[in-house]
Amino acid sequence: MELVDRLLAGDRRALARLISQIENDGAEARQALAALYPHTGHAHLVGVTGAPGTGKSTLVNEMAKVWRGRGQTVGIVAVDPTSPFSGGALLGDRIRMRDLTGDPGVFIRSMATRGSLGGLARATGDAVKALDAAGFDIVMIETVGAGQAEVDIARTAHTTLVVEAPGFGDDVQAIKAGILEIADVLVVNKADQPGAESTARALMAMLSLGNLRRNWQAPLLKTVATEGRGVAEVVDAVIRHRAYLEASGELARHERARVASELNTLLREALVARLLRRVQDGQLEAAIDRVLAREVDPHTVVEELIASVGSSP
Ligand SMILES: Nc1nc2c(ncn2[C@@H]2O[C@H](COP(=O)(O)OP(=O)(O)O)[C@@H](O)[C@H]2O)c(=O)[nH]1
Ligand SMILES: [Mg+2]
Image (tube, rainbow, N blue to C red; front, side, top):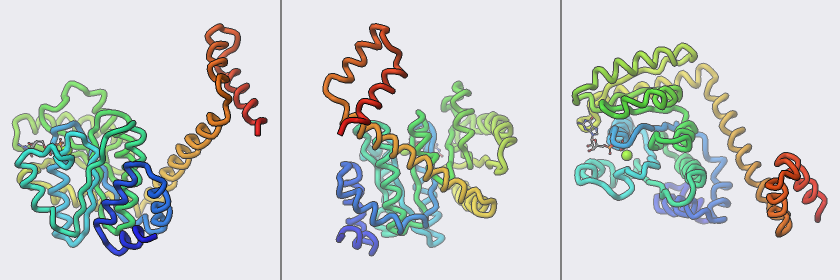
């Protein structure tokens, strides 16, 4: 298992190769991931989510610099199709990224968005495991906080940062309320822009409601990511949250829930695939016809299908 050994020895090219295999969903990746699994569990996983343009990538870069300054290594996975990491970078973003590239203590990778969101979620989860096994102290996952799949990706992290900016979706209060529920740290970025103060006030009001139901009081912090202002405080808040997770036993509960949910998903997929392979050609079509003709209801027909394939070889 040469690739795995090289990855564990710190070879970044081996890591990049494995992530490509993960994206291609090769059987090779599955074997490598199985061998790497005992080496995972060290990294602190930090999800960063929020609307496109709020400054997530900029903030992630700046946070990585702060962590590097404190001797920590940082892996970054960007699942944001608008991310500068995915190649469509503006010149300014490229210049900023130059501070990080060339540093072996930082690894940045954007995930290709081809295929289904479910596939992307799994590929991202596996890429995070690869970075964890490769020994990065911090693994940051940038996702666009647009839909459930992205929110789910962010939720696999130990600590979830929600990034807001003045003028971004102030009208979608309902969505915001949902996203605030998952925020362990809330950041109002672009604090140099007009309206930052009122955005922060509005969020603070909503946050205080959400915080009533939780033991952890999600802090609200203001940043100017382009200038690195307030970023060290965000890193400090993430570290405080990690300490809280450990001290309260939340970390162990979170890990257990995460593994349970992962096994649940894998079991479902495997069982459905296995059953569908056994359903005879035309059997499913016939079942659909009978449901359409109101001869039988969907639940009953599914029970019949399972019974029929269960007894076949
Ligand atoms: N004025 C201002 N602009 C910022 C700040 N942070 C990021 N930006 C700019 O906002 C744009 C989007 O940033 P980006 O990090 O790509 O946002 P993302 O889509 O959330 O990843 C870029 O042009 C950044 O330079 C900030 O704190 N203040
Ligand atoms: Mg981005």
